[in-house]
Length: 220
Ligand code: SAH
Image 1 (cartoon, rainbow, N blue to C red):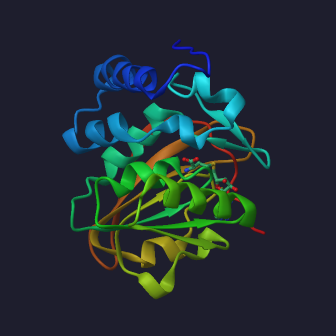
Image 2 (cartoon, protein in one colour):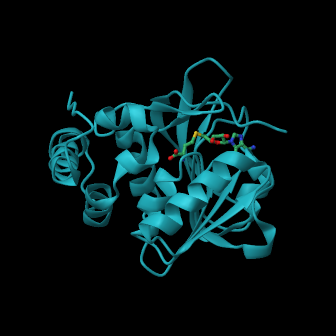
């Protein structure tokens, strides 16, 4: 585990980020260059509480307040890689949390739309985006299970909290050929990370990417 004292500057964080990419992401199958570059550039230590900054580049989730967590870097990379998104795409993320995953996405695609149910987390994330200069991220407070109908359709949707079932509205808001990546399963149990491809208006294809553990997708 990489652990630093807070007085060490951004240079050490840069090195820690490089190690994360080389030692945690590449050996475990993250090989999309745009994802690796984004993971190597977004300063995760600015997305965690100050007292936890020294652990920002360990491959682990961390608490961010309101009983919520910033996802483990490997899982963020895996989910974003599964989207196969390109530089002209608009992507929706449900569960802004710290804003970290949205920031990583913003380095790869044209526009990121992200919805957070806790107003204070959304506000903090928005401040971070402004401070760090991420200008292509749009934040909304609300229940993400309904998606963002005004901005549909999306080339990809990523859900950072687990519903018990796949929300229909999200599939509706995908373009044909688009992808939805989300954990599905019961609260307090292991969930499955699903990759859903919208093959046509009527048909979807589902692939199981393995067992994961996320906070539940809340309904209010
Ligand atoms: N992507 C985040 C992970 C945050 S954890 C990051 O990189 O930090 C999941 C987040 O989903 C939490 O912040 C939680 O408040 C939020 N959430 C839970 N249910 C939600 C819902 N129905 N709509 C929108 N956000 C929700």
